[in-house]
Length: 153
Image 1: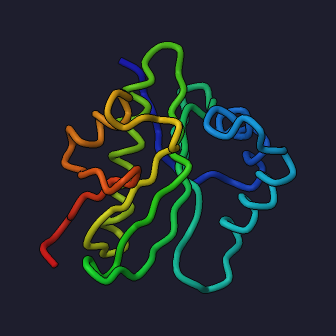
Image 2: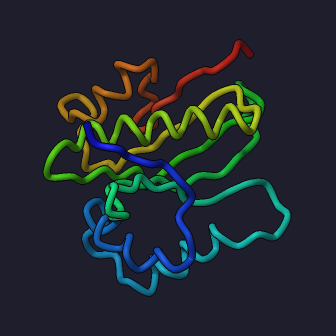
């Protein structure tokens, strides 16, 4: 069985993650990704934010999501996740599952009442395996954003 590790993306891994991000944003220039990622990794004492990645045993980045901890009218404190990417020749569903577990772990550590995960609009949620996976683990579609309530509001 493969060992996948979910951990924060470091500054020196930003360029390595670019091909993965291009999977859902094919026209994105490298410089735009680098600037965006650096902003998420800056520590300015604001609400927590960052990039989480799934790493293989050989330290290859197989998946990632960006996140921010935000306030929400319905759920109070939420983990808002975007740019969810999972790519693996062997088992992309295992990578996506590891990322989904990482979402829940991160949300629980930050005391969030819900997770809002936005997937690319190109992933028609009715027939895309990633959308079905989120629904299967308790997320509900809110347009192309999924929501999983972690504790009652």
